[in-house]
Length: 160
Length: 280
Image 1 (cartoon, each protein chain N blue to C red):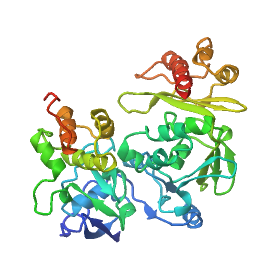
Image 2: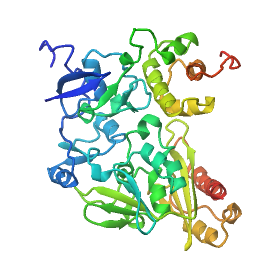
Image 3: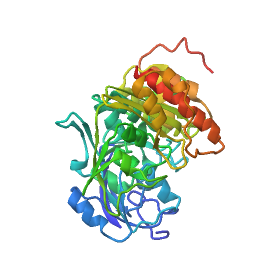
């Protein structure tokens, strides 16, 4: 056991970890349970967070590897006044979630995509979400929400 | 851990520890990494996108993991004096996709491995050292006649891969850099296994002034291989048609529920033709 400190959503979070402690377990142990463990085999993307600005699967990185890094999780995505940010609001407006379990990972992946590519095509969004699996198969509205969040007209995309 | 009244704000969740315990070191120089790897049953960790799932499955029991991703000497992309593209072993797939513009087919290959989150962690050195028979990078290294530079020697790609999940790397030896001679034309075409997105068959074709090299991943039981008949045919006529008349390679092919050996052998031919066409 050693103590490490990771800056999570701009605030230092310290805690004891073993070498084998995964980042997702460190975060959830710190009460940040918005980052979900879906498959725990690095396939589903429910645990996507940003480490130094890059989307990574928090179940596939050890907590010690993120020591000293800036980690962003779903808990830090809302606007400072607590209202939903553009991506979160678009998910609500376009019914981009059903059971909601995959949503934190979807929102974090979407945020990473829009940072790299502010106006992605539908195809580019689908490609980028390859590592985010929705068990409800609600992909159409997730894609639509991300297009809307990037300021694109989605009125022609059928609700499915 | 249970019942010790740990603070919810600071305690990691440990209820269900899946991995065997190990020590963890995160050196910032190659020398310190080699020292740490001298411990019995120590194992290097690069991006971890294969090793961490392996550890969770309890298929490996290292005494110590030595992270190689905090070593600046192992990161980055540059061009050597002889024009080769040099990629540090701990350079991520995303970094190669964005930074290997001098070798577009290599950048394209890197940008199509796994998914974006995996590409932000997985590294070229980790992929080559693991030599998964369905991984993409071994095909690029072999088709390019790349040189794998380790802490102690330089190994030609032709000598590096030694069968499924096996390379000629010694215990405690780590890849430092991979040097790719840049071809005149090249393309990598991957037929994805639809669930895992690994290559069911992937073919890398690279045309150099002294001939064409063709490397195949995903197909053969012994892992990545060169399809020499196709190389000969393409060296005299670089066209998809030059491949269509060839017999399929006679390597022992993988057969599983995703494709029979015959299907994979056929795909090798099809994907080689597509790669030649895409290389232009």
